[in-house]
Amino acid sequence: MAGEYEIIIGLEVHVQLLTESKMFCGCSTKFGMPPNTQVCPVCLGMPGVLPVINYKAVELAIKAALAFNSKISKFCRFARKNYFYPDLPKNYQISQYEEPLAVGGYIVVDGRKIHLKRIHLEEDAGKLLHPEKGEDYSLIDFNRAGIPLLEIVSEPEIRSPQEAEKYLLTLKQILEYLDISDCNMEEGSLRCDANISVRRKGENKMGTKVEVKNMNSFKGVRRALSYEAKRQIDILENGGEIIQETRLWNENLQITEGMRGKEEAHDYRYFPEPDLLPLTIDDKMIETIKKQIGELPGERKERFCKQYNLSQYDAEILTSKKEIGDYFEKCVKLLNQPKVIANWIMGDLMALLKEKKAKINETKLTPELLTEIISLVINNKITANVGKELLVEVFETGKSPKKIVEEKKLLQIEDDGFIIKVAEQVLEENKKAVEDYKKGKEKVIGFLIGKVMEKTKGKANPQKTQQILKELLKKVT
Picture 1 (tube, rainbow, N blue to C red):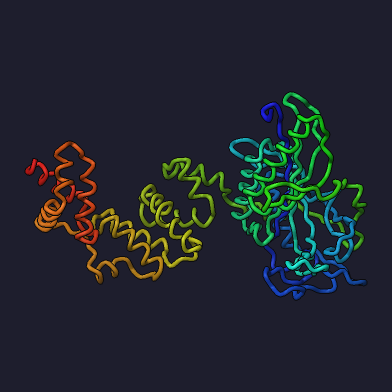
Picture 2: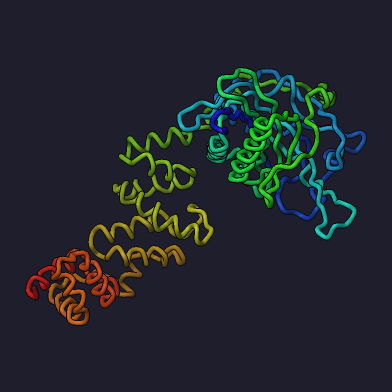
C-alpha cells in the first residue's frame, strides 16, 4: 500500500553561526561553560536594555545565502515572535518574518534541485534541564539564549526520508566548507524540524502536515520521517484522518509521539522589532562577501575528477571535508601521484583518523611526511607493508620517515641470494602448501609470500619474492 502514496517533506534547519559573541549582545557563545555564566541584562531580557545587531552574524548569513543561490533582500527587518515558555526570558524571540534576509535559492541533492523558501536570522532560546531522578522541577540554562541562528526553510519538495538525510548532509557540508557553522548536532549547532505529509500518487492537493521535532542525528531524521510516513499511511488506509499537530521523535522507542496542536504564524503575533532599525544590505557588501566564498564542494568534486583523473567516488570522499581536500592537494603539489596519494589518504590514513578521533589538519603527519613515505614505497626503498607501519609511527611522532627507516634498518631487501635462502626455508616448512600448488591451487602463492614477509619482517621485495617462489616451485613439481 505504501507504494500508492507520495511522501512530501519540507525541512526547517537551524544552524548556529560561528561568531564569538551573541546575536544582540556581547556575551560569549562558547559551548560547555557552567550554566548561566554567559549572560547579561540584554540576553536575559531585563527592563531598559537595547539589542545591538552582531554584523558578523549578518555577514555569515549573507555568505550562506550566496552559496545557496538565494536572492538577498537589500532591506530586511527583525520581528518579535511572541510566545511564553520558561526558556524564553523576554517572552518573545527576535526573529524575521515578513521581510527575511533572503528568499529562494536551492540545494542540489543527487543532481536534483531542492528549492528554498527563505533564509533568515534569529536568536536562540535558553535550555531546559530536567533532573534524571524524576524531581518535580526543571532548571534553566540561559547561556544559549541569544546565540545567533540562521534558519533555512526548504520548499516541500523532498520526496523521501533518505533524500531528507542527503539534503541535510549536503547543507552541512556547504556550511562547514565556508566556516559559517560547525554544524555539530551533538552540541546543538544544527537542529532540524520537519513538516511531513502523504497523499495518493497523482493527487495535487497537499495532505495534512505534521511537524516532527527532537531529531538529534542525521540517521535520526531518516528514521523519524520513515516512521511518521508509515504512521500516516496506516491511518489513511484504515479510514482515519491525519491531525495537524507537532510530534516528538522518541529515539529510544523509535516512534513519534504527540506533543501539541500545530501552531500557525498568527499564533505568534509577529510584529516589527521596535528596538532595532531595519537592516540595509548594499551591493558593495554583497560583492565583498561573494569574493570570500571560493570553491564549493560540488565544484571541487568535479574539478578533482577532471584535473586528477579520479573517480566520482574518490573525488566525493576527498572533498567531503574542506581540510581533507586541502591536504590532498598539498600532497599532490609535493608528489605528482594523485591516484596513489588518494588511495593512501582514503585507506590507511582515514582509518587511523577514525581510530584516533583526530582531524587530518591537526595531526603530526603533514603532507610533506606522507609524501615522503609514499615516495619510499613507490621507489622500492621500503615495502608497502613497512610503509603502512611507518605511517602509524609518523602519525604518532612526527619524525622523519627516512630517519626511522635508517634507524630501524627497514630498507627493502633486494638481494636475490638472501630471498632465495628464506624462500627455500619457507617451502621446506610448508610442504602441504607446496603439494597444493602442485595440484593447481595457484592462490597458495600468496600464503607463501606472506611467510617470506613474516621471516624478513616485511622487508623482502614482494615482486622478487613472488618471482623466486614461482621458480623454486617449478623445480619441485
